[in-house]
Amino acid sequence: MMLILEEYFKNYPARRKVAEFLFENGLSVKNGKIYLQNVEIPISELARVIGVNRKIIYHTIDYIEKTYPLKLIFERLNPLPSLIDVAPLMGWEVLEIELEKNAYLKASSEVFRLLHENNIAVMETFSRNLREEPAKLYIVIDGTLPVEVFVKIKDIPGFRKLIIHTPERDKEKFVCNYCEVKYCPKRVLLERMAIQ
Image (cartoon, rainbow, N blue to C red; front, side, top):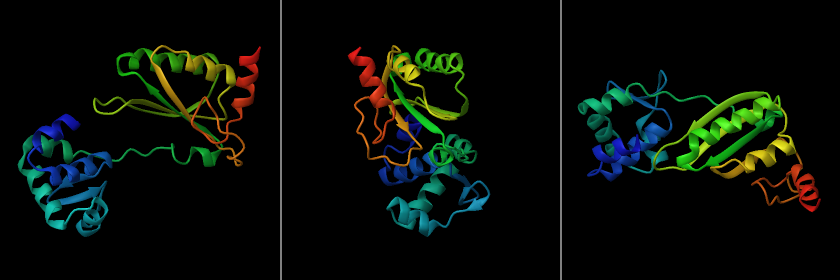
């Protein structure tokens, strides 16, 4: 999608900034207005958030509606609701796994195989593998990831990084060398496993 925006907005950097914001947030363009599903978004507030003047927003809307391929895309955009940000509040963990682009499909299927084999309840999955961004897989699980599965995920070919968003309250106990969380109940067990 970013390649499409780059092509159509290459001569309009400010409009591209607006179009990227609309796309990333699932805001649609219809009948000269911008919508979040069926709720009209005020142009002045949108301009303030994006950091452009209102005129740029209006020019972007006009350009999108006069450019048929862009119109087809932008009139169908919708935000995707996700549990990712609220999962830790619900007592669930979020696994944010960065994978190598050329190994994305095989590595992501291997992650799901490991979760299935270990009876880990998956609440939600979300994935991004766009050309311009790192390939990421987000998985909301019920409970916490067992240490054995954590170690196996780390060993999957194509694995780059794992960030665990944890529901733990006391997040200042440890700084983990294996994942990017401030409190990691797995750290002690992993260090014990490394010593053995």
